[in-house]
Length: 164
Image 1: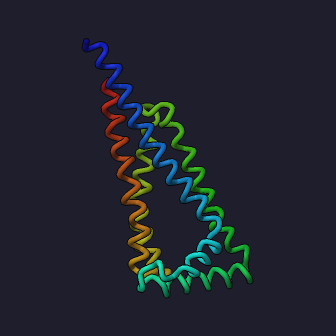
Image 2: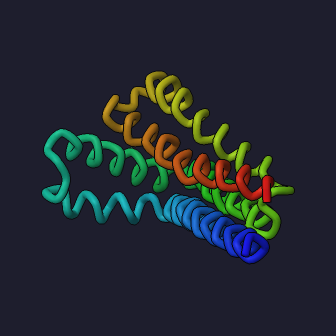
Image 3: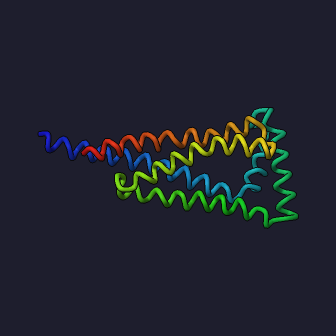
């Protein structure tokens, strides 16, 4: 009976790990893909400003005008956000390793957790330097704070899997 319980438990652990990794990969892909059409998304947001809280509306309008003006006059600057988008997609690919062999590739999970932690000081420091409103910096910080949750749970599951 214990022999049957062990593989079944291992299968459950592996399934949970895969679900968490697919969730994280999906988040990275969506984040990456949405970084490409920034002007279009901002235009849509500005056309529907009433859907946003009052304190965010002027910021969205300002950002849209800045992106629209910049793209009209200096479109090459958006190449930087294209690379940001590409980086999200490349990082997502790295998580295929843990999907295939979570124990061997636990370092990718650790890398992801470190990256999530690093989001917070970057958003707070660079955001301050770039005059990003504090509420927007907190939103950016939330990506790191929320991203680490499935990764940490995945990390703990992989540690349990190592025992099996």
